[in-house]
Length: 66
Image (tube, rainbow, N blue to C red; front, side, top):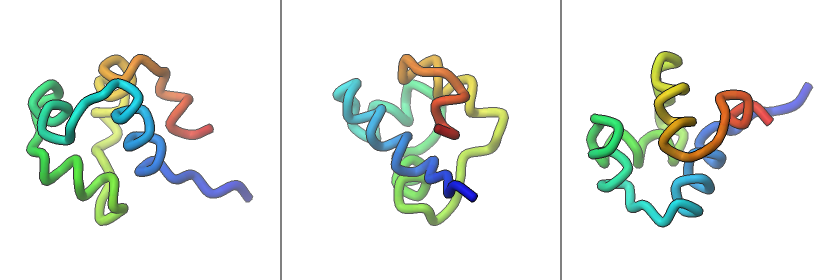
């Protein structure tokens, strides 16, 4: 079974877009602390956020599960 690490994918795409956690959080309406927690695997974004994240990062929802 393949392990999916959404946190790493979010971080890598955010960095490719040259966005800070604060900029990314502001753009999607969450706090920079929430972004940090997602990227440190302390929690995960609500599934309803995935299309918003994908749109903002220029990827597809499927990319989070690659």
